[in-house]
Image (tube, rainbow, N blue to C red):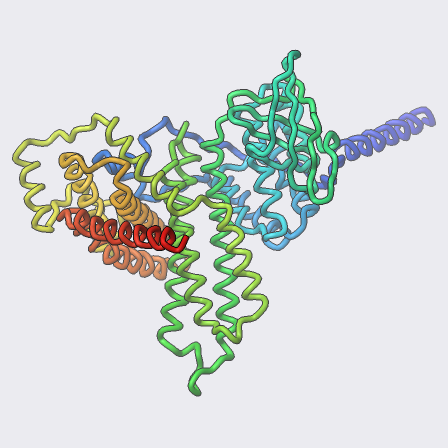
Length: 547
């Protein structure tokens, strides 16, 4: 009997030692969490035509109007429980590490959470300015290694990064030189940061460097002839699609920051009075608050419609969608901050409001510039139009009738958008279809007249504005219709929001579309161009006279 007892005691001690060893190995970077049970992966469909590019080519994917659900029930419940943990615990890097969020996009075998793009974008809503930059760079580094790394690189680095070894991303900041032994020598300097690894991307190669190999010099880290072996060099790196997804994460965090600005404004105006009247009772103030929330709702709708495309299909092309979200986000920030600052008043703006505004402006800096985005959208759309061989299978008389009705400003609604939305949104659906058909008619008309080229900058800017608002209207209509049909709480507000957004967007696009259809924009742009040229010539001549 004593031998049996001693045997039990021995095995119990051995089990405790094994638990201690496992806990030590898994907690090497401060990870103090239990690995969650894997949930079923999202089933992806075969590749399909890019949505916005296909509009340039005379098509429209009706399925997008249904605003399909990306997550299955198990993943949705898992996301909601994760959001409850994350909601108020993302202000410190250590807390983010303990929650396992540095491995959001890493696969399960590498100790990651294997979250989809929709889930990652949702989690990014809760990162503040203290943690956003570190987690954002780290997530992109994980995606780069996961997508382009060799099996050995994945097995070596992904578990480390998923466990909380922070990695920062640096694009074209250092110089790489190939050595005779096929290693690379990196020289340059980057900003100091609290990380363990650094990932440098130079052209189509990425280099993984441990921070121990660098030298601290004040606020910078210097790379003095750092040698990177071939095992730590990632070949054939293409950041295009990864950066498109990264911009969606940034926009998701931006939308939440705008909500905080609106909430701070509401708290500021509640006790205020103006002309012996309560400020919250002014119609203009109420309109500004409502428009701000509608713009944020539209931005969110565009973000998650785009993540559905990345999660639901193999090899998705979301270049135009990501650029449209960024351009709309920039316009939303400009309009919302300007209006809310006016409501708060110049002399009574609180420090909290100013700090929240600064946080929003810092996030906007991570997006591409408006002019660059507009040129990218139009140039990519026109390039797809020129390559497309799509021709609608209709008779000559049908085409002639449609063109005649279009010139009369009474387009024939061939898509039937209202059939795919709730009946209460049929008038808004018709507004959207009018704009889509006019846009496609303008593309064909400009192509026939030889005006459809990327050198026509003013035309490109107008086309990009139209396509961005078409995407915005599509997103809000689909989201509101789905919410109302499934009975989501406050879905009636979403329906009113969608109809208002579509009506205001159509009113904004109406003069632009009329100018494009009539060709008046050519004369208007020539007047602007001649006036600006003369102004510049006068200033140049004045400087020559003064010198």
